[in-house]
Length: 588
Image 1 (spheres, rainbow, N blue to C red):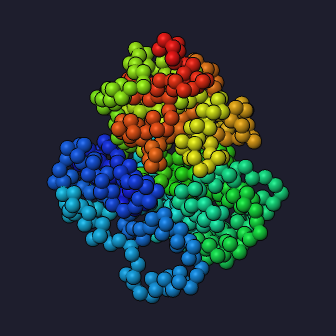
Image 2 (cartoon, rainbow, N blue to C red):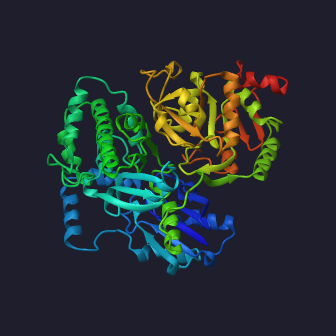
Image 3 (cartoon, rainbow, N blue to C red):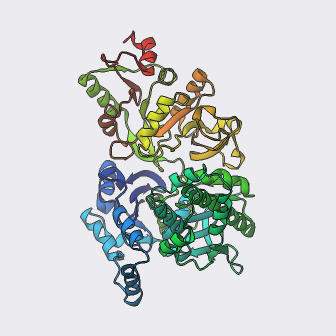
């Protein structure tokens, strides 16, 4: 049976399930000029997926849409305009009109959503609609293993089908919803408003705000935290729910209230207080849910829990024995959850099938890598090699100071790179750390660059990893056991981002990490997601060919091949990468 899962909201995506197994995931952001502006139906991603798989529209048995209802589609510019108009007469009139007169908004109807299927040859009568939070909970449950088969799934985000947060219990894969929080009490919308008030972009910069908040210091920090904490309280009659207090209006329309509530407060104190509030409040919520449901294995999902730098505090302040983050906590993963639940519904089963491993995106096939090498060699100015022991050669180049892009295998669900679509370099050279940071976020000086570690290394290198389930993959922030003086951070013991790779799921990347450890010891292997000039993850070998020279990389690892740039004859002092190459290519 073929099931096509579609998420047609913010960051649209599509997934193909064949007989219960997720075969391929596609993201519409990979096909547009501005990935931050994309919303709506994933037309190009769906068309590409069906072309690659060789499928016709009539072969799809079920089409599962994530979300019973879609919010009003907004580009980033429209979102900022909405925040700017909040509290004005114009915004109040619009709100009153939508309340008094039905169908005056721009929310897409089901008919609007289905009309895209005809253009792709798909059959609208085979469609079904899955609740937004149920789809999100299904992805989290399918990708997490629990020792006793019971799992508590907590979702916290901005909004979805009128719900801002939900609590689900999975028993042997069967999902039961036990609590919901309405979108007028949304913590995600509350955080977006604070992000906007601090001059940053909502729905994009919340993670950067949390990183800034970790640096905040001073006696005023606790006072501002208290001003935020009085705005929410847990419902005494519904212990798993929270509600607004302190005259806070609906959180999706509280710009003017917070502007007054936080006036004359410093930027760093507000950022730090927002982080502390989230850590304390969400930690209490996790504990309450685990206690009331008698379930100690917890998985977190939703855009708020996608702020991975909160994990160390949440892990230390909760009594859950197992705490992890969904492989795809944002809306883009909802297509998978919708497809999984639609299949279960069609087959008449009540359980969620396991997801397996998170590498389900575009594949870099060996034939494509060979064509890339041939074209780069014909273009000139490079060395090309196909070493017998690829991992050993790459590890030595990285140890010598090379900044390399690696494209191999498939793209992961969260598009974090995880070594398969990443820029790799050693972490104790400031110039390399700065270069990888600038290629990732050139507009942010404080952004932390993650390092690549094996799941077998976690316990010996980091604290608080005992709550992570076996075989964990993805990005987490963890506290190092030894000071990380090489980072230049104010607090060398503070949490650092790491990309965890499972040795069983990705043996090639694991072998590279082990070889690097043998060459340089405890020096971290930095692993930045490899983005092209449009800010998209490098998805295909063609993307890599268009990007690597313009970005000034020293070379590319493309499948079994290594392509290295020759030294610039105008350079009077060779870079670290040139020094490393001399041992392998007979000099400059």
